[in-house]
Structure formats: C-alpha cells, structure tokens
Length: 154
Image (tube, rainbow, N blue to C red; front, side, top):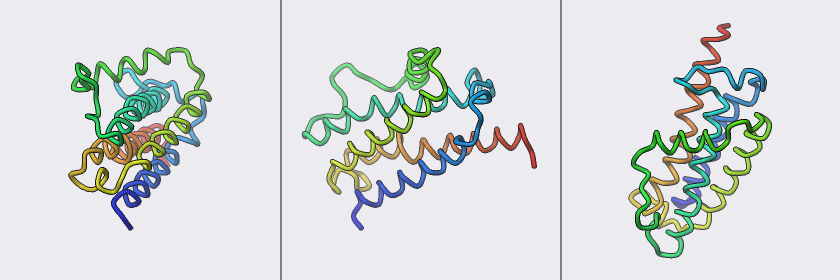
C-alpha cells in the first residue's frame, strides 16, 4: 500500500472515531458549553472550517504551487477557529453535522487527488492532511469521549 492509500485509510479510521464519539449525542446536548466557550457543535464547526481552508491548499499543491497564497497565514489558530465558529452562529446542529460529513468527503477527495510523493512522510501535503484530518479528528474524539464520560459515567 502506498503512502497516499495509507494516509487516506488512517484518515477514514480517525473520522470514524470522531463520528462514534459524537453521533449518538442528542442535538440538545451538542450546544452545551464544556470546552472553554465551546460545545460539541462548535468542535464540529471548526473541523469543517479547517477542511474548507485546507481543500484549496491541497489543490494548489497538486498544481505545483505553494499551499497558501501570499499574505495568508494560519499561525493564529485561535483567531481562525473563532472565525469559523462565528460564521456559523445560529446554524442548526443537524446542518452542522451534515456540513461535517460533506466537508470531510471533499477534504478526502482533495487529498486523494495528490500523489504518493505529496503524501509520504516529509511530503509537501502530509502535514496538512494529517493536521486537518486524522490528528485533528483523534484530538477532538478524545475530548468528546471524555466529556461524555464525565457527564454520564457508567
């Protein structure tokens, strides 16, 4: 199996972990604040936001260009996260869930269009895919599982 397929497989496995951690949470609980000023709804919104930002970056890499246009920086993650969440203020939880599924699929499609070379360790797109995909999914899946356990220990 090549680097691309390995990373895509890892991405899908981590996405399944995220979905397992959040799918059974009732919509009414998705808006409970428990992670700073965020709840599960905001976590999903910000994951989708990073997908939307990274898809064009992956497309630029596939065309031999730098991932980001001149003048664009993602160094201030907190500001970007706030921007993503603020832009989706008032969106229904069911729509947030649907947006996550759609943005994940578009993100994976953009990653799948890249070569093994781009997605191999040290490749130009590897960290972008890992950071917005499997590492990101697992980070938040763990937080969601911990929150669910704290709020409903068995």
